[in-house]
Length: 458
Ligand SMILES: *Cc1c(COP(=O)(O)O)cnc(C)c1O
Image 1 (cartoon, rainbow, N blue to C red):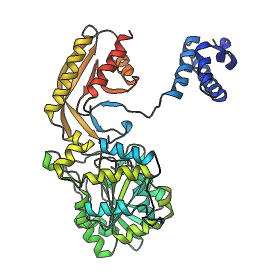
Image 2 (image 1 turned 90 degrees about the horizontal axis):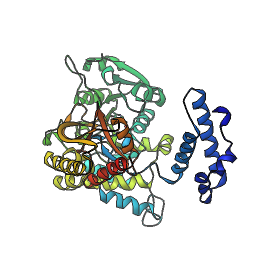
Image 3 (image 1 turned 60 degrees about the vertical axis):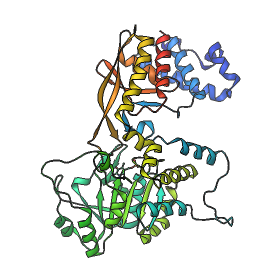
Image 4 (image 1 turned 135 degrees about the vertical axis):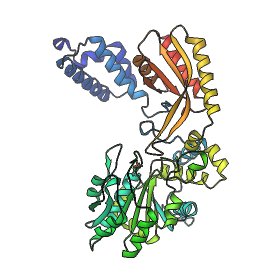
């Protein structure tokens, strides 16, 4: 096979390939073909059985990738509410409209009514003040950036005291010890994994101490014989020694989830009220907005952060500002209105009867069309929240359970992910489970269409 690999010029003569030259620049098509041939060659060398048809299909797939956007809508039937791979928070329709309007022309970003350059953060800062009671606020690229920036601003070259029970790692290689090292702050660990006492903090304080850091455990819990120091105690200690307290909340809730029979996630307002000097949290976890990191706290600290050159490197663009403003404004509304309109909250608090109704509707259609090829049933199951939020909590849900009589379940799941609008479901042993907690209203139709195109092609 190695000897028979065609040249790039030869491939360009294949009729299925030639047609791409009518639309795309010759040089780019050539490069794509060359890279694909190189890849094909290495696969043969590594022992894979390949033929010319495989090569042709790979090249067509690569070229097709020029036309189809990869960053496109997908259906989340995994049941994980905040799934980083699926873009975390789905926005409500109103926010999508605002993003469209801001991006399809010029827009107000950092200009005032006199046409002068203005502070880009002032409008968001005001909104955050109203919502949280903080003196000031600023947003940056993401919460990992926010943590880095705060540590760098307050503690570069000096010590930050943190409990060993809070040295977390979250997805995408965010690890507190490494972020600390990158910020230039020196980590001073105290306590043990399961127990840290107030006296451990106090004993560690010295003239090099620049801050006390609390980190929300987010995606795990320590249970059993445990002790964590409360924020109020840390704040008192900080006051006693004039050392600022940093509170990295991770997801950061603006509403009290315990009202809705969910575990209470640390609330941003409470952190500020308790007296944390600077608090940070993600814009795209429970807040349900765009990716960003929100930093709030004492005016003097926020001002210092604004002057840090690193802030400029983590700046948010007009789309993020517009989407976050719209998201935060939803929180100003009456709570019932908020929940009705807010993407993430709507999913977290979606009534079980609605989920069941949607699952039944979809199952009925699939049965009607495909019962010769599939076994379909509706079952009670549980969904995860994900994104390091309310981590130990499982939400009741309903799934459509699909068993395939012909192709393997892996193959079926893959074909659905390759649909025009990709559908992501979870495979459990020989069954594909489509979790309807995270399937948005009307998306049942897309799921049925994905099954149709997958199965009718057979
Ligand atoms: C999720 C999380 C982060 C990182 O937030 P991103 O928005 O993903 O950058 C930082 N700290 C904690 C405690 C988190 O839970």
